[in-house]
Image (cartoon, rainbow, N blue to C red):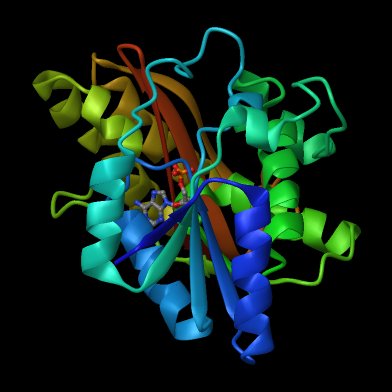
Length: 284
Ligand code: AMP
């Protein structure tokens, strides 16, 4: 049975007791509405730590004004049932008041310049809010290891940067993206899609595949090929498709050779989806 904790004090006591027994601690931060992608992170965490804590918290700080904070799915009971079936975990499901005792305008972590690019350009303040809650979770749980998904590549990049910049004593593991059989990356937001939008959403993974396919022609050829797939799909409104340097999270020049990342974001109706994939650019 999965234990559900709602307070920081309960988490601290649970972790202290595990530590006293010499057990290591792994943390998987989530916003709930768990799917197989989240569960793959939990299973990975179970191989890395003795006590696995899954946080489930829809963090208001990382939603920009006008975003889906109110309608974001909150399904704690179903989430706990999925965790029961997947692994031995402890859930930390705090209230907003428990996490933000001093209100939303208290101290924040700033993500720096990369926090203003791509997701941050469309979602102002998103990464400051994300890093603030991740920093809080790291301080509350003090895990040996924390597991994040490659699905949210910019988030993984910025968490890694925060851990390095602020000397946070935690090891990060980034787990691969879990997809539907048709290629659509699993996301808690997929449930917002109409049937027609869900089918059009395949253009995201299709665009990444087209970019990878065109990679022998260089980064610009990859961008053009990827964007063409999305522009051909009338239900899809492209936000960005870019080939970026994994070290800097900035667009690569056309002379770049080596491993890069192709990232995409698009809107389908009122739903915004993101995805990414590795791309190898050969010397030209
Ligand atoms: P979220 O609940 O959307 O904040 O996501 C919680 C964690 O699950 C993040 O580290 C995400 O990157 C990760 N995640 C979300 N979708 C997937 C997926 N399809 N495959 C693997 N990890 C995922």
